[in-house]
Image (cartoon, rainbow, N blue to C red; front, side):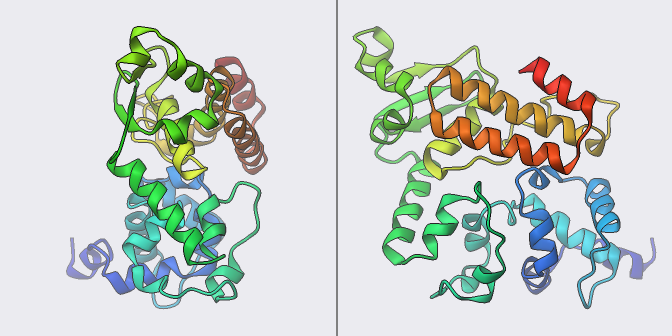
Length: 274
């Protein structure tokens, strides 16, 4: 590979990543959680060319490389990831800042994004909840799938789930041990539910990639059906564990995904599987 070609695929610099992250078109297209599943270069390239994305100063191939780097770090997924990566962009942010003004209104926008624009106290609350979620500090309960154990907090999860509240009040061995096991639920869907408890939203899970995709499929081939199936399964687990807010969110995300890439067969498969 020639030196010029190699430079197109080199690891992006911080300034390159910031430039692309701040581009309003890139942010609008990749900020949805369904777009957040795009990790492979081929799938990202398809979106870039289909939507005619262009950022001044970058060739198409370089833009794809930078977008792939941002997607890998989930920068567009919610503001908390972007804030950790580029804290200088969020210092003393005002509600009328360009970034806030350009954000499209949506019923499923991450709650902490909205609260962060209200004021510092609310932002502190959101950040503290995320810190509890990521570190498990002060945990008084564990919830486990077959793939992962989550250190959670009764005061946070029980008010959101009637099932978990009842389980914690029960005199059975599981609740007295401070642990609840969910062996019959898919790890990726349990992970989404745990995200919702603390972040009021759910996005890409470490366990989602193999939900539907077969070895001979490209990621882009199964993307739309995987998104529909995922949201349907999230609704099912929310129904099972009586998490009403998560049910509403899953319905909203399902409708958005179906409207974006409607395929009747995909819809029927998702409905059947769920």
